[in-house]
Length: 77
Image 1 (cartoon, rainbow, N blue to C red):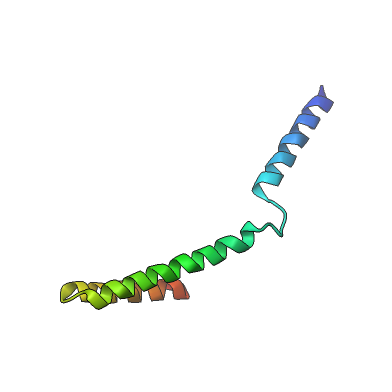
Image 2: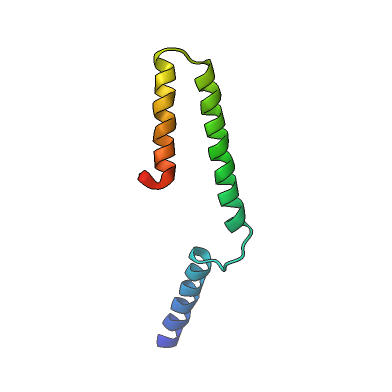
């Protein structure tokens, strides 16, 4: 009986280890940071294009949003 529980525990532990801690070198490890940087840059470009067409209070809000993002991405958050 003990051998059965040991075998089941080993299989479950091995499965959890493979799912939660995949081996290094997978392609997604390199794709996701690149995709994240692209999306951040697209968001900043969209913010700057909206800033150039805004007037008054909206323009000030875009400035505050831009500086908040800059401080956050620089490590201030």
